[in-house]
Image (tube, rainbow, N blue to C red):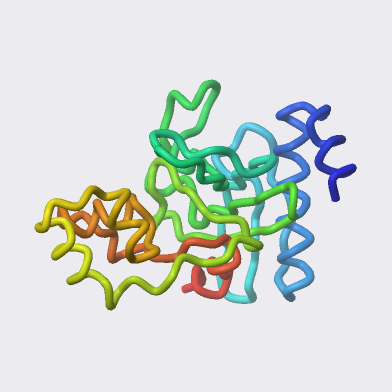
Length: 194
């Protein structure tokens, strides 16, 4: 695997994008769908037919996980600039431009599928080999209590074994309830179909 990752460093961004598109086509075909690359210059990279509907799929590919910005501790995640398009990401996709985003982690050849309506500007996903964070839903009250006692978010993280950033989101009431999937493997094509 390391040899593959090292070779990947030497290929151009255009080749990385093309590799992602072909991986998505192969994945969809193996799953029983009709899929093929689109023409250049369109807002989508792959066309898929499920027997009833045609879907426009935009493929976003990343080489490998990278440190998440604005974190005290290093957390390597796959980062995707999902809603941006065009040279330098100066434009956004319109409502009718894309039906599904396919997010590809090239180093592990992992693919996640996401309805365009669920996509955010920038999205982060843990590599599948990372042990998931403990189930913290039952620890929300403890997080708030410890914060009220004057504990820092780092101290709360150490005491309860939860993610520091998650603790902060719980306390300020900005916990993301609508999108709790953390891994690309959680994003299945079947959940995107009408």
